Image (cartoon, rainbow, N blue to C red; front, side):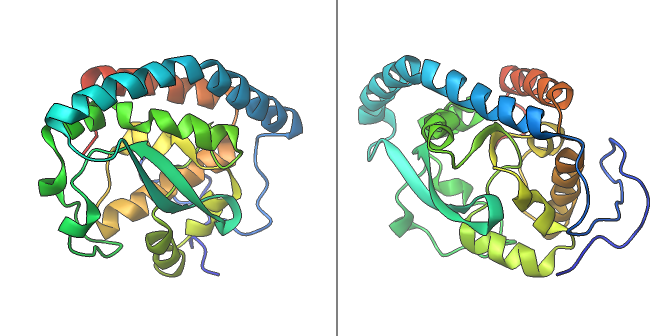
Length: 225
């Protein structure tokens, strides 16, 4: 399996280099990961009533501005390369209208409906993933899960990509609030380095910073496509 080649210590920078292998130790300990999982479950369960309200409102609005199914499920790669069905509020025209994308192809923006674009900008389309969190497939904070087929290609093509797979993927993540949407090979490589920084430095302090920046990103409609 390939690794990042330079042996420089990781720093909180967009273009750090890190010496990484399968024996690399992480900053987060047993207490951090245990309390994080408890936090994920408590917050996600508490959000269920709000989620139900969102479902009702979006279902009604979809009748006018986004006709079709309420939810969209897609195979994504989770921790330890496990496949799972990630659920989102649907924001695009049905897949049968699209041309099959490759792992480094640009997003088919023409498929995004007007109401769907607003949901993507506000990140409201991600709310159903609290169900994935409750089922243990995701966390509130972690590397964003990639489309399963794309992730398989990245494992082969992108140095160090395997490191992000050692944690549960998140609804929001360090790379998302630092970089935004990625749809090119170079952007994927930068994203991988940012995800690696998070994995190696995972802590409650870093999670709080990601949460704060996530709120700022949502308010500013930054980085979504």
